[in-house]
Image (cartoon, rainbow, N blue to C red):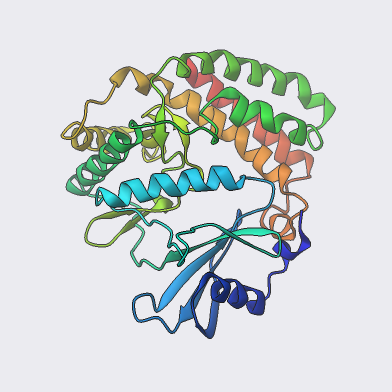
Length: 314
C-alpha cells in the first residue's frame, strides 16, 4: 500500500483539490474516518465554498467499483432522493488519481446525527430507503460485491487466522460453518443495489433525513438496509422496525420474510469486523484505535460474542 496514504500532508490535500479544478484558500480540516482519508477544504468557489475530498484506501475498491457507486448516487440525485453525490470536474469525471491514490470530491453538506428518532422521522426515513431501493432495482452492479458469506467471512478468514490463537480455531470454524449454512437463505432473496452500511451514523438530519457514505454499496436484499437501524431486540427495537417498514410500504412492498435473516446478517457483520481490522493492521491509525486487537482476551471475547449470536439464529 502507498505510504502516502498513511501520511497525507495538508499540502498534498490542497494540491489534489486544485488538480480537480478548485482554487483553495489554504484551510484544511481532517475529518473522522478510519477507512479512507477524508478532508474538508475551503475554496474560492461561490457555489461550493467548502468541499470534502475523499482519498480511497488503496487496494480496497477498483476504479470501476467506485464509478459504479458514483453512478448509483447520480441516479438517486436525479430522482431528488436526499443523498450526497460526488462532484464532477470540467471533463465530467468524478474519480481521479493523485500520488497513486484514487480520489473524489463531494459538496459539503451539514446535518445532525440522531441517536433516537420519533415515529414520524422513522417513517420518513423508511420512505427514503424505499425510494433508494426502487432506483436500485433498475439495474445491477457489475463490479461491486454482493451480500454473501464469501464477502463478509471467507474473504476475511486468511487475515483473521494471523491473529486468532490455535486453541480458538475449532470454535471459530464452527461459527463460520453455521454462518455459511444460514447465508444460503439470503442468497435466495431478490438482490438489488443497496446502501449496504445504513447505520445511524450514515444518516444526517437537515430538513429530513440525508443518507450519506455509499462507500459500502453492494448488491443485496432489502433487509440489509433495515436491520442496522434497529437497536437490538426489545420493544423499542420493534417500534423502530415497525415504523421504518410502515414508511417503506407507503412507497413499495417490503418482503417481510427477509426479516428472519436479520440475526444472520448481524453475525456476518461481526465476523467481517475482525477481518476488516486484521486487513488494515499495518495502518498506524488502526493500531491506535484497536490497541487490544493482538491480545488473547480480545479474541476470547470475540468468540464468546459470536457463539451468543449463533444461539439467536434458531
